Length: 110
Image 1 (tube, rainbow, N blue to C red):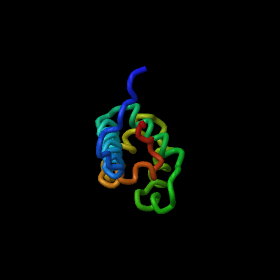
Image 2 (image 1 turned 120 degrees about the vertical axis):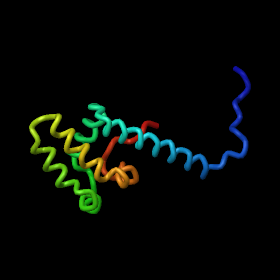
Image 3 (image 1 turned 180 degrees about the horizontal axis):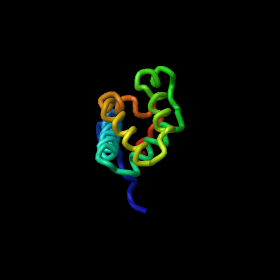
């Protein structure tokens, strides 16, 4: 065994939390960009999250989630569901990143 690693000097817990939030925000932004760009796997994850419907009534009203869910559930083809999701995402993308987890979308990796 070698010497015990020392924590970095002057580690500010608030800064560390801010750095983590920034990294999560970057991950969400990348996820959104990939879905908008046609990444089928990313889009499928969002479609499945919408179908599960795990959001509050306030979030649903703000983002039109029930309307989106009805549209997705009524669409026969995966391509059609993906188009609906991407159209919705394009209309709401500025607000979606801030409410990502409240919308029931995938959590960033830890």
